[in-house]
Structure formats: C-alpha cells, structure tokens
Figure 1 (cartoon, rainbow, N blue to C red):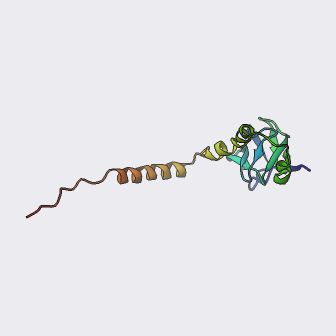
Figure 2 (spheres, helix red, strand yellow):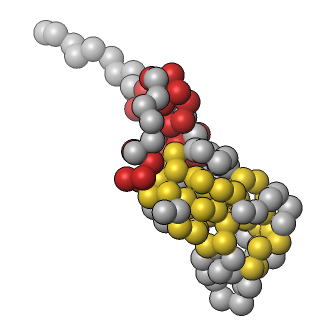
Figure 3 (spheres, rainbow, N blue to C red):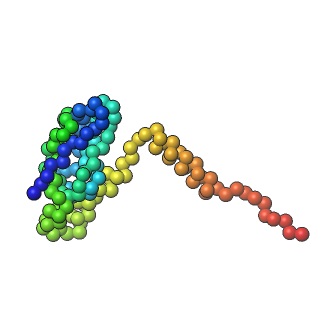
Length: 139
C-alpha cells in the first residue's frame, strides 16, 4: 500500500517553500535519501530527499507551487512492493535506475565547497609536478 511523503520541517520560522523542480516522475524507483525535488524558501534553496526506498506511485505537487510544511508531496510504494512488480528487461531496469546517479552528482554551490575544490586542485597540482632536483654527484 502506498504511503505519502510529506514536506519535512525546513527550519525555524519557515512554514512553506516553492517547488523549483521535481526530480522524479511517477513510476521511478528511488533510493533512500535520493533527492526528489528542489525547494526554495526565503532563506535558501534545498533538495528534499526520499525518506525511504521504493517506487513513486503518484506526484502530488507541481513546479511553481507553494507547499506548506507537512503537505503531501508524493505517494511511494515501499521497496518490497516495488520488487513485486512484473519482471523488466535489463534496458528498462537500467533506465529506471539512471535518475539515482545524476541526482547525487548534482553539486550544491556554497562558498565553502568552492574553497575546498580550489584547495584540492592546488594540492593535486603540487603532487603532479615533482620538484626538479639535480642528480647526485659521483666522486
């Protein structure tokens, strides 16, 4: 039996958010903590992750909609129910699982993330270019 995924608390004094984009469609199989949608509040833009693994049965919201905390966003059938679906060929299985990877690859911009990336690139550059030292002299 499908259960509802509701909008969790977004922080102190935040009572609603605007749906920027919906990252899944009806029929998609999602993993626990996979981002389902991006939400904008007056303080920030944030992803809303799935609280459980399963198959999205119904999308209850639309892009541009203002959604209050506690409102139903999706209906999801638990992972065991998703496994009971009829067999799919490998191509269909791969395409159903494809949304998982792009959602995790999508970086969230923050000044701290940019600084960390710059620092990592500088360290990698130093490791790639060894210092030139003259060969030891032989007597």
